[in-house]
Length: 129
Length: 488
Image 1 (cartoon, rainbow over the protein chains, first blue to last red):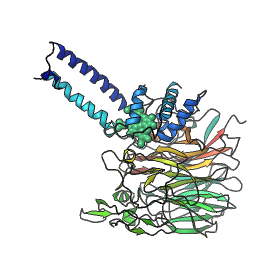
Image 2 (cartoon, chains in turn orange, green; image 1 turned 90 degrees about the vertical axis):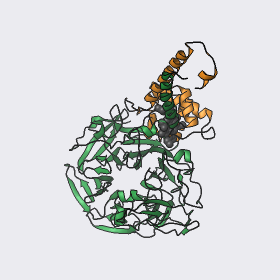
Image 3 (cartoon, rainbow over the protein chains, first blue to last red; image 1 turned 30 degrees about the vertical axis):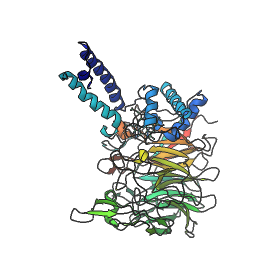
């Protein structure tokens, strides 16, 4: 935030920048508040996913071994629910690889890209059921 | 010069950046299933329990006090075990009850050393595992009510007790002995459980010799009048420090183990160790021993974060990781096990008996996955799958959760480790009926198929709310039965 002092700018840019920052901050804050409010409402998932493809089946196994403990059935448990809101896949990928906050990070040695893609496909299948 | 509104934006942006890095977890309140109010009496309604299509649930008995087990005699008559003790330090009378056809309950036997944690029937007698007030024991109870103690003085005075039993295909009686502590070190959390004040010298006992790192932990001293501090190591009494290289002799019986005896009480042997609280024991249709193991809590002098309850396939002679591993992952993996804002639990053992194997399944963290049984009947279906009763979390005492964990019966395919809900409350949210405001399941603690395998009995311990400590409610226990309606 030192640029305003070092570089001359046309009048009005400062206000625009502030407005842009405010907008980004607001969007991020909303996303975060959604993340901080783990409240899934829906019927319990009892049946196996029907007509599921091999990637989803793999995803279910990987999820069971790597994620279910803290996100049982991808709902809130120790950690927040992860199918209650439509989070973009890149954000889930980022969360898994970097383990932001209290969650552990999963390296590619721990969970390779094929397995992570399968988990994302499984989560999509859960959301669409 | 910065415009004032520009500075105004800076503050929330900074908070936001911090939140993104720190995550929301530390700022969210615990939402455990027991964190609710309850006004009795408990009422039940099977239609509040959801099951897969084709299955139906019904109520067999209500008004039980802390039931923990179900078994069937040679004539197939249903018997229920009442523990006589619950976390929260409520003591009643442990009893074995026979449920008569007219709905009445006959007391077969009662005891004085609760909790009676599990019951099995074989060759004309019931076998009961339990006891914490004066140590663990295995009892043989004749259908006429005669009680014989097969083995006693098991190291069961601590957090976790003598569990099981299961009669093996070899005719031996297998039982679990839980650990005295959360992760090897006696601390003020054990005063909260009640036992540290009763037995200030009690501690964990390894099954084989172990060599210590000499890691010691400072804690408040609930045993002394002045508000002093004490230093305690692993596998030693409260207030006893340990040294690097110190050897703790292994003995039998020990804590955190599965052991076995003959059904006359003789021949005590070690089966497996390095378990934490091996609560449920069952042999699969292919005669393999499976054990549910309640894993670490976020409490005491050596708290551990995020460790899923485990389902093990137990190999004789195996070591399963406690107190330095969670399954095949060392607790020194700080990213996984470090409680938010605290250091990672360092190793307490200098040398480990091995690296534990991968578990069959990783169940919910704090789910308290307890009794289990295998379907062996095409009539019921899911042959070879393990059905597991999940008592549900005791948050926030055992650690914070963002949503209730457990409070249902799940089924696990041992080949894949995939878990699916089988009997769970029908509601938009998850949790025990008392929290959801329904008349469904509270805390399933044991499951067992009837002798022909066509019906699954579910022992529901009843309501336990959790404030500063667990508050169990007598006379809220229920026995349920699940059958398949669309039988093949």
